[in-house]
Length: 365
Image (cartoon, rainbow, N blue to C red; front, side, top):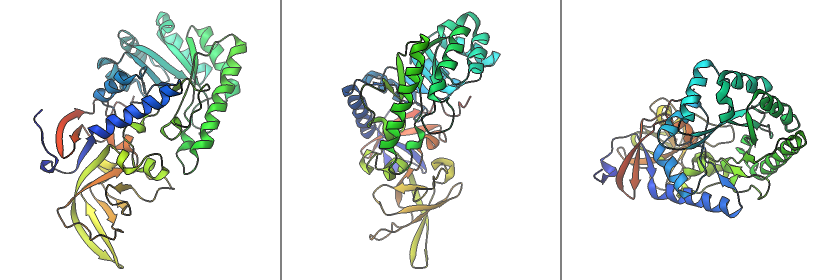
């Protein structure tokens, strides 16, 4: 496409900085390869085939997704190794969709119960042997997943039903809290080690021990986890900024927005920008200091969100920007922001260099 200035864009627009994205992708790939850990990035963050292709070209073994719909999008885009890291409950219709994906793509599925494994095998019938399954274990996040010591029960049920069990996986989601990452990386290690130890006496070799959230990926010890599945690392976001897992200069996604209103209240300046919850998302964990951050203004905080309003407390020493000024707002949780836009504007410096369609947007099932 013909290049044009970023300043010509209407707001709000979601921007991806191409050079920062490339640096983030290369950095994680190199760091994990140095530990002998395979990278299988979670594509639910970006939902964009062009980025998945970049990740695979850099050395990723394949990608991770959360839904069958996402798997369909990336398989159609030519990604030939996909892991659905979710305990799907199969239906006759979804079994047909799995068969269609298998026509072009190696597919792995997550399971965390004997009932799910048996249901999956029954509905896939002869095609069950074409699907690898991984047993999900709970490493402390307490969402889905069995206790590590119970992994063998699920694995044996899956094997009896005709499925191929190739490993275990976990999501150390409790790493998304201040100061938690190092301890949670140990939780992940211990859970995967215990699960593998439970499977091996049952005669089920464990080829894959898969973990690795963005906060823990670089803390993962070599020799315990064979595969990591970070997603947010590609972009960074305000949560990772606050957790200290990335710096502002590592953040590849921001929302270009315009200051549309300004007011003084109780001696403080408040701005309103035209980027609300319908483009930033409204996720705000209790430990965060706002609904997002502003690039170039580290002390500013988004203190309230409406659908089309971001209220910013301007705590900077510098004079606040005038009405009509442009700001780049970093969403708290970039995965939500990506699921709210049809297209992402790709930039290099102050130029628009491409537009990528968010192809897996809304593919929630």
